[in-house]
Image 1 (cartoon, rainbow, N blue to C red):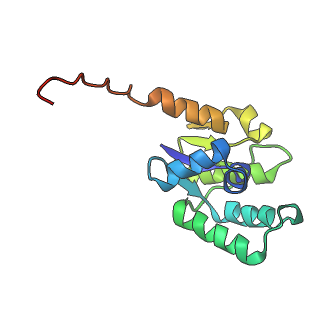
Image 2: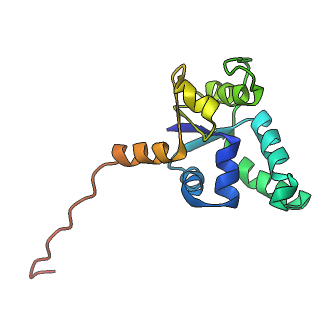
Length: 149
């Protein structure tokens, strides 16, 4: 699977943990291919520098470095205007198209309301993980031990 995580998912996973952190961990383990773009990295930097998070410039730079190491960089070549009134959401769509992503993972209602953009499904973090678990092969049954074990 190839995914683009919206900024809200990255911020939540990096700073607060939970479901969003599990998705980031899947990307870092190589079980899912994660993509971002220059525009999304700039947005992430701006959000992380907000006073309410209390992060210093050097802390934000370190976080961005880890994101760059973990996520592949998609280079959008197409300008998309599909979400009225919210060009930041269009940047997510552009990254997904450039990455040929199977999923956009987001908590953003404008994007979720689309449901799908071209061939890319748009899902919540919980729905993404649920879909992964339903696609996983069933666990192997434990083999009974014999006397020769």
